[in-house]
Length: 118
Image (cartoon, rainbow, N blue to C red; front, top):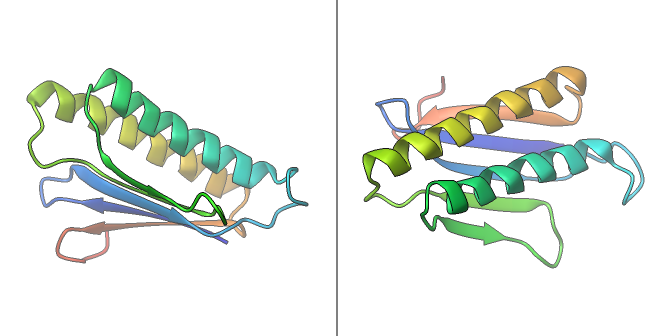
């Protein structure tokens, strides 16, 4: 199962995401749930880099796959923050759509910086 974790500040801004696991919804190379999650998450991070013009902290397990972590820097301009939040909220909405179609393959969790769940 894919676990997608969104961490928010008390102000409700998403500051980091962590996506791990495999959907195992089909044979390797034909798993449309994994493909969807990968495309959506990489697209959102590429958008943050290009459109918000910032470099987030990114960790990827390139050997085994199944792991992506992204954290925004602390010192964002208002434009960078706004652009990043639009892209991250869009990612969350898109992943929720995938979850609605395939709830057995993806679980989404949101917590605030203090660890409380939403």
